Length: 550
Image (cartoon, rainbow, N blue to C red; front, side, top):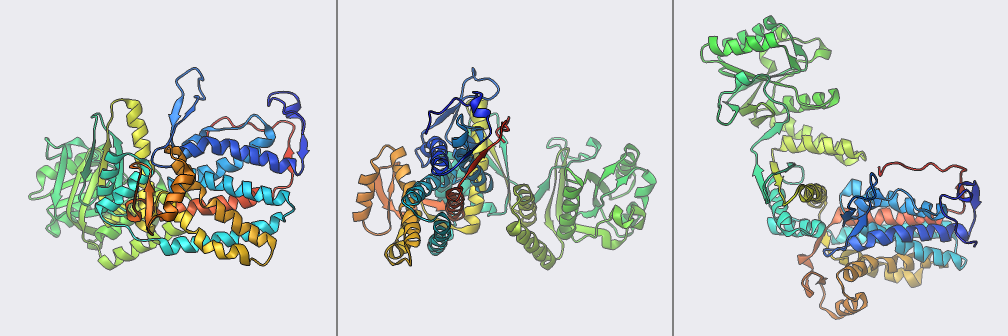
C-alpha cells in the first residue's frame, strides 16, 4: 500500500473505493486504535486516558477511566480508511454504555479479539459469510452457558460487591448496595449533588413527584415548609381551573361527605381560584384543602402520571378530553390515601388506597412495556413510574472536595445505579472475566467436531476471544496474564483471582451483572460479524465531519 497521507490533505478528500484486502486491513487498524484507548479502563484497577477538550485544546485535558465516555469523545481518526473501523467500534461501545451503563470495555476487547481472529482466517481463504453465520451459532452456545451460570443476587453485601465491580469506589458501593437492598430493582433513586465532602442517603416513605404547592399560603408547617394530611381525599384533574366558582361543586361534595382533608391535583390553577381555595381553609369548619400542579414536563408525561395516581388512590380522574370539569365531580372521582404531603417543589402520597389487584395489573403492564422497549428514554420513564408505584424511594447525595470531583462521582453513581438495576433484575455472574472464560468449556468440543473448516474456525475464534477480558484485567492491574491464568488452571474449582488483593478467592466474592456481560458478548460478536463481511469501503469527495461527541 502507498504511504498514508494526512487527513487534511487534498488527496484525502478525493472520492474513492477501497477493496480487499486493504479494506479489511484498514478496518482492523481502526478497531485496534480505538480499542487501545478503551482497553486500559477494564477492571477494578483501571488506568486512565487523557482527552483534550473540544472547546479549547489548551485547557486541562479530561482524565477518564470510563470506556463509554472515552469512545463518545473520539469523533474521527485522521486516516479515512481506518476511521470506518474505529466508528464501528465506537458505535458498539456507546450502545453498550448507553443501554447497560457498564461493560463497554469488555465489549471493546471482545470485538478486537474476534475481528483479529476472523481477519486472519479470512486471509487464509475462509468464507466471510459462513464464518459470520457460525460465529452467531457459537454466540448462542456461549449465551446459553451464561444463562446456566446466572444466579440471583440479594442482600446488602452481595449488592455492594456488584456495585464495586462496576464503579471501583468502595464507599459509594457500600451505599448503593444498601439502597438497592431496600428499594429493589424498580425503586426510585434520585442522585443529587451535595455541598458536603461525604456521601449520604435519605429514604422516603411512599412515592413523590416533582411538582409542588400552587401557593405558599397553603404551607401549614412553616419550620419544615410543607403540609401533611392524614387520611386525605384526593381529586385528580388535568385541566386548568380559572374561575373560583368552578371549585364550589368540589367543596360542596367534600362538606356533604364529611371530608376533612383534600388534595387537589390539577393542570393549572389561576390566582383567583387559588384565593378561593385559601379562603375555604379559613371559612369551612373542620376542612383543609391544598393544591398541586399535575406532574410531568410534557402532555404525555402528565397523562402517564395521572393514570398512575388514579390507580394508586382509586379515584377516577377528571379529564379534559372527556369533557369533564369540576362541576361534574362525583364520589367516584375521589381517591384516598393514608397520608399526603406537599412542599413548594414536591408532593407525595403514602399508602394509596386503590384496588390492590388493579395496581398489580397496572404495574405488570408497565413492566411488560419496559421489557419490550429498546428506547432508553422510554425505558427510563417507565422505570420511574414503576418505582413510584412500588413504593421504594431513596435520595443519594454526592459530595466531594471539589465541584469537578462531585460531578465525576455523580456521573459514576448514575452509571453504576443503572447497571445495578440490571443486576438485581437479571442476576449475576462470576466476575473478573471468569464467567466468559468458563464458557470456553462448552465451545471446546465443537472445535474438533465442526462440520467444516468455517464452523471449526468460528468456534475456535470465540473460544480464544472469551479469555481476552480476563487477560486485560490482569494486565491493567500490573500482573503477567499468562502467570495468573496458569495459577487458575491449577487452583481448586470455583476460584478466581482478585487483582486488588493479589489472592485467589471464592467465585462468590467477585460478581458482575449477568445482563451486562451477556449484552457485551452479544454486541461484540454481532459487530465483529458485520465488520468481517465488509468487502468495499466507499469514500465521498467531502466526508461529513461530526462536530459533537454525540
